[in-house]
Length: 458
Ligand SMILES: *Cc1c(COP(=O)(O)O)cnc(C)c1O
Image 1 (cartoon, rainbow, N blue to C red):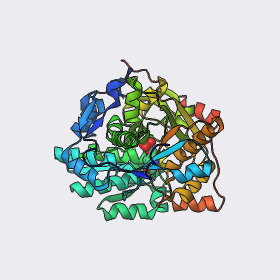
Image 2: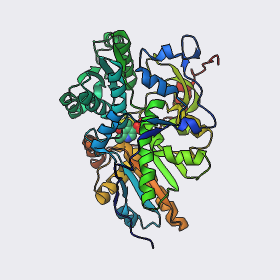
Image 3: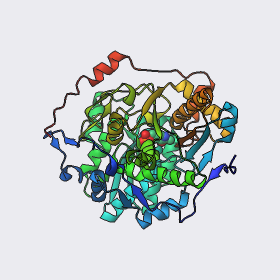
Image 4: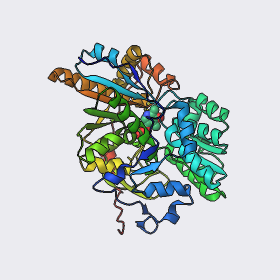
C-alpha cells in the first residue's frame, strides 16, 4: 500500500487555477442556439445585453478553451479557496467498501454553497461595466446569499426577489442577505407589473421560482443601468464553476489519484458541470474515461424523464428558448426539501453532453433515502450536508456498495455542494418521520411537455 492519503487535501497558491476551463471548446457537438421567442431566430447579442453585463454575454457564447480569472476575482477566491477535497475514510469503513471515496466540499463559506464561485465574477463584470444595480431571484436562499456577499464586497446595490413561501419559512436567509446589504422582497411583490397582476388575481399567492425570475428580469430591463444575474443553468455559470473541477483534479493528482466515478447533484447543472470540467476535458480529448453520474430528485426528474427540446427557462416565458432536457416550464414540482434542485430544465451544455453519451448516467432518488444518506454522512464525516448535496452522497454510497459487491477498489469523487445549517426545518421533518417520496405520474409529465412544439428557424 502506498503512502497514506491525508484526510484533507489542499493546494498551495501556486497550484491554484488562474483560468477557468470552458468545456464547450472540446465538445464535438455544440448545444443548439438560444432562440428569441418573438422572432423564432437565434438570439442576437442585442437580445441579451439589456439583461446581462456585456462580458458575461460574451462568455455565454464563447468557445475559447481557457478564460483568465480577473485578478480582483482571484483575490476574493483566495478568501475561501481552495475548497478541500476530503477522503471519506470513516464512510468507507462504515460501508466496508474497497472503493476510495473523496468529496469536494464547497460548503465552508458563509453562503454555504458553491454558488459564490459564480456570484463573485458576475458582480465583478457588472461593476466593471459601470452597472448601478443588480436584480435576482432566490428560491431556497443560497443564490441570493451568495450574490449578496459578492455585492457587498464590490459595493453593488442588490434587489432580491425571494419566493414568498421561503421568505416566510426561512427568515434567517432573509436576515443574512440583509446583513450583507441586499434589499429583499417577497415574491410576488407589488414592485413589478407581473407581481401586481398575480396579486390582483390571487392575493394569497405564495410564489414560485418562475414568478420570482420574471419579477427580477422585469425590474432589470425596466430600470436604467440595471442588470439581472442568474445562479445556474447558463454557460457563464458553468464556466465559473469549472474552478471546482480544476482544483479537484490538481488535488487528486497530488495524492496520485484519478476518479473512476464523478458524481454530482443536478438542479440547473452548475455544480456538476463545474466538478466534471477537467475530467470531462480528459474524456472529450480521449485522455481518460471517468464515468459521470448526475443525481436528481424523483420529484423533479428533468434528465431521467424529461424531453430534450426547446423550452422557456422561466415560468413567466420572458427568457429566450433553450434546447435542454425539460419537464416543461409549466411543470410545478412538489415541494421537496431540496429547493435548489426544483428546476424544470437543465443546463443546455449538460443536456447536450448527456444526449451525446459523455455524461454517462442520470439517477433519480427519493428524498427519504436522500435524508437517510445525509444523516449517516453527518454522523460519520462530521458535516451536516445540504439536502441538495445529499443527493450526491446517496449515489456515492450506492456506487461504493456496488464496488463492494464486485470487489473493485475504484476511486469515487462526489460534490458536497453545501452545508445544511440553514436547512434544519427539513431535518426536523425527517426526524419527525414526516418526509414523503414524490414522483410525478407519466400523465403529469405528458401534460406539461405537451405544449413544447417550438419550431425555431435555424
Ligand atoms: C443550488 C444548489 C444546488 C443545485 O444547483 P446546480 O446549479 O445544479 O449546482 C446543489 N447544491 C446546493 C447546496 C445548492 O445550493
